[in-house]
Image (cartoon, rainbow, N blue to C red; front, top):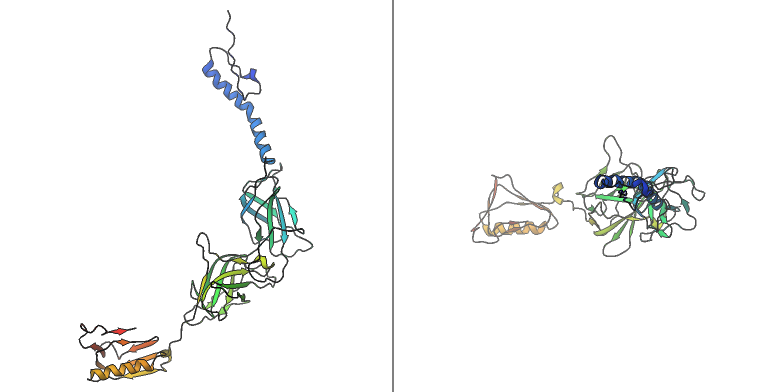
Length: 384
């Protein structure tokens, strides 16, 4: 009896006869058969994957994590996120410039007067990437070609992303005239992106919201060349000898009024859009910062002008010396200088100096303070 060919069929083969394996060659023939079937199945797999990408089986909610800015009408916006496909559309609206109001109004997706945009696609009509999306900001939206702040949402059918602002303020960090703090009457510098929009004449605004409650405090940004002298102890806000300090889309500067010392939440508005265009400062990266502290400016020391000086000349009478120092400290309760003459001054009580009092002698080997029984008298010292 003649041998019949041993035929191996693969479920993935389009033509089973082309993948037949003669008897007696099972091991090597099996490999040839599998290779044959995979080559023939590849177009089908590619077609299935392509169809799935072009027309997803279900609408996935799109997410926008970040977008490029500043952007002008006619320029391209890059959006990075998740869930983008060939059916994703962009709902866009320019926020009308008006009263900025106060922070607290929720940002919502564009309404009836919005425009629907199709993101850039490949020549085959597919989305460029499930995580990157590009669209062009129209040169004219609802009859206006002005730049400003725009709100957009991404849509996959009925699934809609959270609203995002284009050209809205994105505050990275703030600096006060004391560094991480500011003084009442001092200044605050804000750094980030979208802190202003072009040179349109709209003034950026800062709102201080007290941690413990109370009315928000609205402050307009400084315009033109910025040069602010801070209260005592604070740094001066100014440019260098070559460049004047001016506000821009990346930095804005604010002179604080005489606010009550305390902790304040910082909100910024770049002058464009309505009350939903405020953004809160929360730090940069993972370092969340809820409040910025505002403190009283340092007090000017009276002794600086030598206008409030009390001279003490000691004698051999210890009790008399104690009394002279006590009277001098009382007389200088608001600050000043106690100047001690040449010689050794013996005391029995501690010198408890108040705020802003300077104790000065004639030199380290000219004026000497000493205490009777310093080891047995607990308060024999100078207390500041």
